[in-house]
Amino acid sequence: MPQVWTISVNGQIYGPYGASDMRKFAAEGRLSAQSLIAREGESLYLPAERDEDLAPLFRTKPAPARPTFFTADGDAGRGFGRAETDESSESSHFIIVADMKSRSISGLEEEIFRLGHACQLTPQSWVLSSNQPINAVRSALVQKLGKIDVLFIVDASNDKSAWFNYGPEAESRIRRIWQKTQEQARA
Image 1 (spheres, one colour):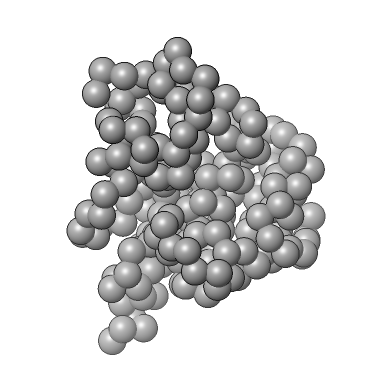
Image 2: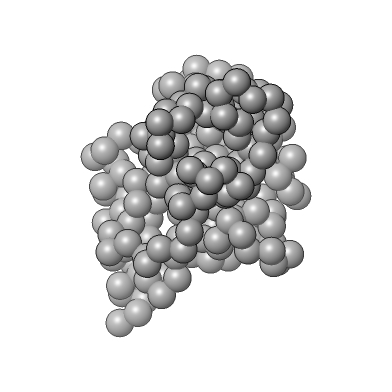
């Protein structure tokens, strides 16, 4: 894959990114099959699944033995959250908590309300009902965060969580707690 791509998110263009970046973004859930991408020099943005070099990144793979970066494995019988291709109109209920240190919270809040029905609980926490999977919600909200802002999302309907920018130690603790709770529930 010696190609270079740009990604369009909410009308903003990001990149260019090489193949290794695109693989990393797909593994993290930041690039989905429906993400709009264009090859270097092209102006037409198409879903990533339609690019012959990127399409293999979105083919169904066996569930990993360990949770992927930025996520905590919920029910081991299912993947993390609904698949990006799930066309169900069923809404999930999310709890979103942010700690905004470098940017205004208004951009994040606008994005939360754009994703579905929401209400603010505290100055930096919300409840959201949306038909988007957790990784799509996370990806949309991360675009509104700065380098030192943090985000934690719980999909209460599907017993899933996703987060951003907590650092390796905190992420490891979150995974351990989330997995231990799931193991106890199955026992």
